Length: 415
Length: 169
Ligand SMILES: [Zn+2]
Ligand SMILES: [Zn+2]
Image (cartoon, rainbow over all chains, first blue to last red; front, side, top):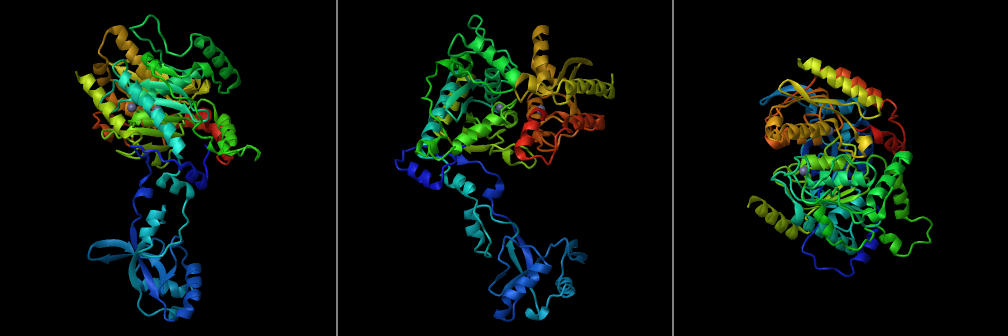
């Protein structure tokens, strides 16, 4: 993935198109919600000149608070009240709870060689952020409570402020989503749990590989994303479902050329022999239902080679070339590695997990799925701990058009 | 046949899967005390990462319904799923949508489990499906470990990915 520098991103913003939509990144709650506050003991430093020695001593015997400045306006952070390491069980009015008493803390400090005369006799209890800020915005808010050690993550900030995409890229994203909108209007039959269409694109050259619309009237698993993933598998020598349509003679999967079947078989052999992904350029996109092949496609333009475009070809191998090489290396049974997918609507867990298994890189959807959507509505699947692949997700792309299309489809299918 | 004997059949299927280089997960769909679908992973064969044992069985049941002229919805409603490993989030979503009767699994799926391990899919669907885990779990786990044992957890990232490609459940 070509990540342009923030400078490049700004250059790309020279001509700001009037767009009706904003791509909202779907991030895990740790980026959205502020970290909780926790109670901590602070000691009050008697003499200003002792601040640095007090910080040094306390940091060596009671390490921690790395996300916070250890000392602020003569208050020295000592230990959290709920410090499991130092706490002892005690009875209080609310029953048993593990927490650190002031006396116990004083004992620990003394035992570990801290000079208690540096501090005033009584400690105080205050609230400070329990965890580090993840974003600049969080850091701004939290630093009103206590000063922080904060290092913004450039990539996260670019997701949040939207500069991860140039205007040029946003224009292309809109075009691909427009294909998804047309596909949904032409063919989608879904239900309240999952509906719409899917367009899989190789961002390297901007080629559309597969276009699918939900067909759960034909097969309960034929959600748009499930179909699209199988179309890509077919394109590259595999695939599991046989797509037949009653209406036409012996029409299998629609493709742009008649010689495509032979090409696909050749690709199939090559893939099996070499294990390397082969692409048949004339063969794309595969469409299901076949009627989707009449959608007029946007001109193929790379979604990621902005850096190259800006004339850095002489700098040895460019970033995007390197990334292309890594993408090629990563090919295997996970045939959607590196691809972007455009969905009319937020996917259900079946589709979202299918895309995760398939290793898609980026997901864009138009409108949320309040019923069973797991990329923002019911949960943020790609932030669930333990999963070994994470994609990036944006919602709100061409939102109005997607919403209108869904309404029309639902209306059509209930009448 | 009882659950334990069925799980033995599923384990045999998982073992076959292991031998052909697919993730060793075996699955049976039981309808009116008959096995109407038997499946294993075919991710490598199909080049489609969604071809898990359960998804393959679902296709077989649909085929079964077509030939017997049965309404698939009512058939799935009475189906017991016997699977050696806890279904992943994708498969559990499929089984909840189809409202199968029971899901009986062997060992947990710490990477992708959709019953309890990673994400509780049934909660999203007000699911009627009853889930029972832990039947012959250790045997299922042995097969998985056998499959994954070639993977060196300390290998560099790119190498790891390469090795793992063929090894996801
Ligand atoms: Zn779906
Ligand atoms: Zn699965």
